Length: 255
Image (cartoon, rainbow, N blue to C red):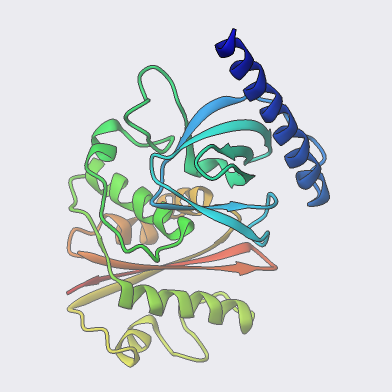
């Protein structure tokens, strides 16, 4: 009887949570919210922002850790309404960064297009890397592995250069490898004290990292940078853009 009471209490709590979160999502402009039936999911990135609404500009409620279990309460486009049992927080997360739990995936959370072998040997990255930056790094290293190239190591100093380049393009309203502020990517790297024997840069304007990366892989020059086995380090920067959604900059070097 006690067990039944607990189950009913849990269902009641989740129903209340869903109502509260739905109201929050609507306040952020959501028009169609799909009820997923409270399925389970796990976080598949090192640090995931749980936000008050379904936008990257929505306030952050708390930070979720990789492999953390969540209850999925609903879905709106690419965003999910979730409940975190550890903190009792409710909010929205981008669907790219959580993985539904199945009988075969309970102990192996993974990104949608990753193979299990990649997840079992994740690339170690600094804790301050953003979700978008980590997504680009994951996509790049997965693709390099599939083509026989070694992993790119995330370089925090080079990431600072890439972030400033992305910001510069948005603020000064241009889209080019040549910056009116910093000059060429190579000149900019040197100004920031980056040493290299070879270097390259990919830039994109898109709403998602996956779409930007897919576009790079359809471009011979960008694809060549991604698969270049001569490069061994990368820095990635992403900045919100009123024109493109986001500006993405990935810089490559050989140390």
